[in-house]
Length: 178
Image (tube, rainbow, N blue to C red; front, top):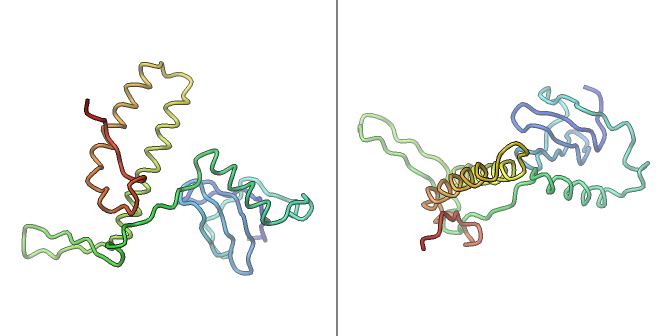
């Protein structure tokens, strides 16, 4: 694969569309709509170029810092950046143990950090779904409200996982009782 420049739009089968933000010696730093900022080796064959940026960033008059600020702003506007959500201190290094009822079967251990990451990704995707519903041009207001109420009930079902979050501002919140 030829050398790609900062600003080139690419697609990855797992992370979706992204924009190259740094061109390091052996890897590209890419902001993906699913997954956030990820470093991918230049030898990786999973990247597909969607739109090449033939201009080097220096020709635009932007410094790398300025370009990162602009890129971060644009990705944030389209919900492509994931918020950094801290795991509760007491869970760092912990394991989730799934023990089958049948004692002949092996239990499954999952690092709490990996499980927590999945919960945060689920929450981020629910938020994107909410944005898509609210901005949908063909749904009626009544349909939007009904779908929004359903999503609120989903959040309520996920409140059990609030124990994993470090800060209450990140908690799942369901429908408020009257």
